[in-house]
Length: 114
Image (tube, rainbow, N blue to C red; front, side):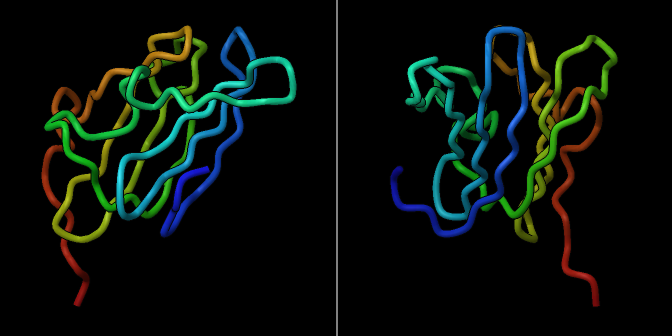
């Protein structure tokens, strides 16, 4: 595993096997796919789940998965450091995601509570 400043893990099942999602604070997020032989491959960039729609990494602070669109696939929701918007990744199946943040109206940055 590459260096990770801060991470959150979520193990879930998508038709073909187990995946582990790691939300990083200081770089692209990781999506590990189970190879079925007690090893995992990092596929975050390929799966479109490593960086924001802008192509830049965000300071991810938390991650969770739930089926927000009721299609049977777990979708990813990430929260980030202040000044960045949260990110919603719609699961397209087969380990692929699409950034739905703008489409669902979440493209506003968060602010520090005072």
